[in-house]
Image (tube, rainbow, N blue to C red; front, side, top):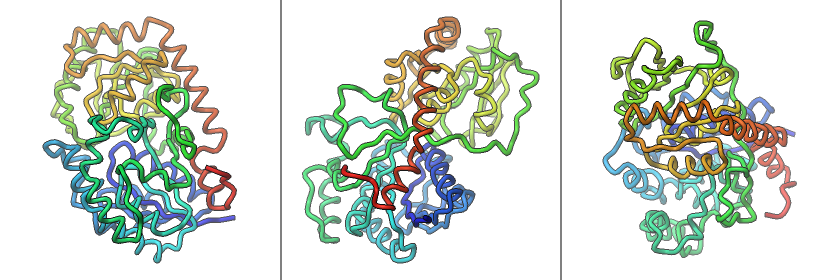
Length: 391
């Protein structure tokens, strides 16, 4: 039976790619999907066949070009918490227009969480990275303190829409039927309590590759994919050091630099090719390794093909994701400021020590199993049909 879904998203760089795939799956399954989002991701939304609604509370911001000073604080004040009252109102307006059976909200959007709770509709949170359990940390924990610095703004917005105050900004997800994490349980930190309404549903499958890539001139077992975010993180110096490291190795490097950089920003050796964009699936089917910042989307893409990763985390969730993949045995993690010689040594270790590939293949099986269970779409369909069961 077709259902109607309203998603509320923001321009979360790599998160948008995973969320877009969930939208596509729902549309292909015959459901009605409407997305409230900023104009910077309008094209992504429309490409899935979903209906786009502009979020009037969203600032003019593009993750591909903008890199504010103190990025996380800027996002907190201008996207995640600052416009909470306006965003909650926009969500409620959108529910009148879309008449959804289920509301689905990106985990970072506090105003959207408020609007969803005030709607009284069945509701789910979509999390595009590992569940880190920040709400169970002490009040003086830096991660928790970061979010709770906006507690007065959140509680003022909650009062406006007739909701009780919360003791922490991070308490808001407790009121949701489901928190769907687009990752796998095998990477979850066993020291982090998993609330009853959290489900690890696996990353959504790769989309069909409509831009096939000719890899005939690449050695079958020596392709190294280099991917450092689709968003602007001032990553050019790191990419240059990675390219310099590859210059002395018997590999073919393929750098996908995305819209944040231009080919002229890098000086590449003869064995390294740079592309603005390439569907990673075509590359990963024959890659020996991936060098990445440790963004969850890139790591999941590598592991879904059984490819081990060399992580050089730069910020955001990348340190946490990198450490969890290292704990699972499928990654080597080094500092993002490492010299080319150190990068080369780490890559050689990753490619010659078989345990990394074995661990990556094991995680590939875990991802395949999660997808076989239906992933986020199965959970959302059950929620819409009233079959989700107790949280």
